[in-house]
Length: 364
Image (cartoon, rainbow, N blue to C red; front, side, top):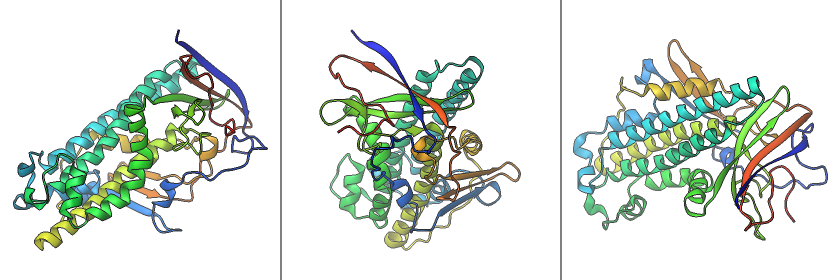
C-alpha cells in the first residue's frame, strides 16, 4: 500500500551551508553563474514603457518588426512568429501568477496557522510553470525556422534539426548560448518528470520566525535509492528555494529574449541584407508586468547552499514604468537562523526501500 510520510529532522545551519562538519564539500553545478557573461562581468537588461512601449523581453518588439516579406512560416505550417512568441509569453505569465498566488497563500497559512498544508497545491502550480518555461524554447525555435524558406533544408517536424541543416546565420550562437540552461536545468527537470516518472517534492526550512519553501527533483540514485537528482542537485544533496529559482528563471526568460533578438538580427542581415530596427510595441502583457513587480518584491530567503551564490537583481519602477534585471550581482541571500527544522514529503511505494533527503550528506 502507498503511504505518505512526512520526514522531519533538526538541521543546525549556523554555518549557512547545512552540511555535516565531516562532509567534504563537492563542486556545485554553477552554469547559472558561468553563463551570465565573461568572468567578473554581469548582464544587464532594461525595459521601459517610454523606450519600448512594453516590458516584454526584447524579442517581442524585434519579432513584430520583421517585414512579412521575409517570413516563411506559412511554408512550414507554423504560426506567425509574433503569435508563437506572444502566446508562449502569455501562457507563461498566466501560470507564473498562479504559482505566485499559491505561494502567497502558503506563506499566509504558515504564518497564521503554523502549517504548510497548501504545499502540494504550490508544487502542482510550479510544476506547470516549469513546463510552460520549457516549452518557450520551442516557440523560439519556431520563430527562427520561420526566417528560412522551406527549401533551405530537408523537411522535418523537429525545428532544431531543420535549423541545423539550414545553417541559419545566428542559430548556432543562440543554440549554444542557451544549451546549458535548456539541457542541464529546465529541460532536465521537465524530461525527468515526463519520461522517467520523476517528481517535484516539497521541502521547506522553518522556525518560529522563518519559513523558506522550495522543492527538489526526486529521481533514482545509484544503487536504487530515491532522492534528489544527482545531476541537478549537486550530487544529490541540495534543493531549490522558490525565491531564488523564480528569479533565475525570470532572468533567463529575458536573457533568452536578448539572445533571440541577436539571432534574428544576424539572420536577416546575412540572408537578406536587411538591418532590423525594432519598433516599440504599445501592446504587451499585463500579467508579465505583474510578474515582474511581484518577483522584484521576493525576499532573498534562500536555502543553505544558495545563500553564498549570486542571484538576479530585479528592480521594478512603477512610475515611469520600467524594469531592470541584472545578473550576477554582489547581492547575496539573507542568512538563516541558528536553529531550523527542515521538512520534506514524498510517497514511499515499497519498491525503493532507501530514501535520501537533501542536506544530509552524500550517499557513499
